[in-house]
Image (spheres, rainbow, N blue to C red):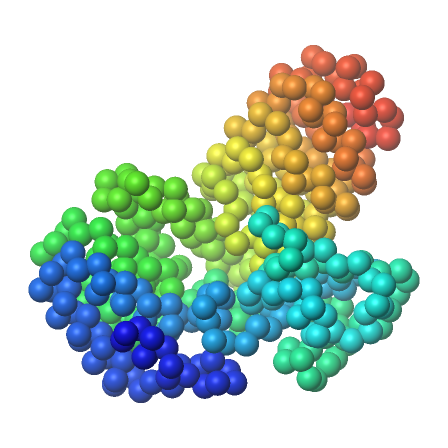
Length: 381
């Protein structure tokens, strides 16, 4: 009941929470009283997480958010448009944010789950059109690249929120007495992830590992996914070599290449928020087994998946219509027919590097499958 009541205090147009900070802190006091009385009171912890979601710097990403859906970023290159929204929407809704797109344009959901709703949409049309984008569905302007830097900062960098900081302090106090309380560790970690992901990276990673291995192993995969996201986010927040701006800034400004090599990643959570920008992705030396997320980056021209425990080429690369170079050295590729069939579906692929893989000795057989339009590179030059 209290969760539904607190959710009603919002601006109907913007979705912004309007409940006074003092009143929210009173709610947090009630939560604190409940968890100190009974640290295993799941209803109190659930209410705490509800408040965290409401006041998160990136609350606009939550599916239950009342904030209006807006474009997060977009790129327009010749006759191809890639756009990322703050939440999944239908193509009918996506169209309303643009002017100048022909009626016969082809829209595609760039999603792992649904062809009807998606956070990322790709639009292809004939010829060069004068396309305009709107942030609110009313005011339109021309663009080649568009992004909301303020929203990206809130997603990746987080930011201090008084309400969440107060809740974190209560968790820390409880953990002095109940060090093994998984609910307290999880809630405190969520607070840190939302407000100080860079400054608190070490303790966040330690807590996620502890939750996955000791405190809550039944949900280990969830915590491992969180950890992968934190590794990527931490990498994006690192300063550039010249000390000016971060890696995220460089990508948003058109750098195009992202190296996530040797970060011990098992997946690439939320990588789709960079889909309008990435043309070159390097994920060498990780723990990727499937690589389904590659399909969420439709502008990729270069992809390096070397030194991952991959035993077959990800089918997701077949949807990458601009992929020209694929490197898969030191992987576990064995089935030559499957590899060949996948390569043939990569319509733009020009070079395939597969040094130090079991299929090197089957190069002639692979060449018979792929023909001459793909340059096979079985040995380092």
